[in-house]
Each structure stands twice: as C-alpha cells, then as structure tokens.
Length: 179
Image (spheres, rainbow, N blue to C red):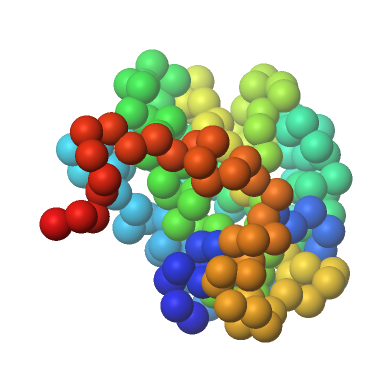
C-alpha cells in the first residue's frame, strides 16, 4: 500500500471481532515500533504485550475507555523511564504511530488509549517503579471491514473529521516547496 494512502486512510478502531492476530503480524507490528526514530537513538522505551483476556480486562480498568482494551485481541503498553526527558513521550508517540500504521497495513485496527489510573496500569502490567506507561495501544480486526484502496487518498482526506487545512497550516517566511 502507498505510504500516503496508509496514513490518510487509517482511523481509530474501537470495536473488534474475535479473530486472533497471527504471531507474524504481531511481530511485524512490534518491529515497526522498535525501529521508530528516537532522540539520540536512545530508544528509552519497552513494549509490554498483553493478549490474555483476564490481563486485558485488568489493563482496561486503567485506561480512559475500558471497552477499547477489553474487547481487543491484543494490547501493547509503551513504557518509558519515570524520570524521563520530555523527548521520551514524543519518542513513544513515534513508536506508537509506527505500530498503528504497521497494523493497518495488515488489516488490523488499532486505537491509542490514555492512562486514567497510573497505579492500576502498573499493577496490571507489573512494570518497574522507575517506569511509567506512556500509552496503551489496543489492536484487533475491525468488526467492520476496512479497505483503504476503496477510494483515493484525496477522498480519505476529504472525509476526515479534521480542522480545515488553512486553520492548521500557516506559512512563515514564504511558500514552502517553491524551490
């Protein structure tokens, strides 16, 4: 799939069917996160993979929208150092976006989930006291099939519920790409 089409057609998926995600797809998703860029190439993250239903339910209680996680086939928590640098959160976001795009390429939907209860997340995941959860990603096959190639990228952009382009983009110092 074209990279631009993959980016503009990806949507948050919050309802999953019961199909398991094949191990080779899970590994590809994790590899996509692992190779994300990071400040000074430090890669100050760990990925905690949760797939057992009872463990997913425990983790679900620590996020803002529990159904996103409890109904998923898989969740990946990205943990970073507790006493981290500001860059750690950005780097975790880069890894998360890579994973969600990697999953999308295989027809697997995903959704980022913010942490409502840090202590509950720590108890569910068992990570160290010197770490914190940056984000929890839930994954599964969407209950409604998705076909990114069913429409051109421009149509996906037009249908996106986002602020208008001119409300978000301001050119400073002259037009970009004019050289």
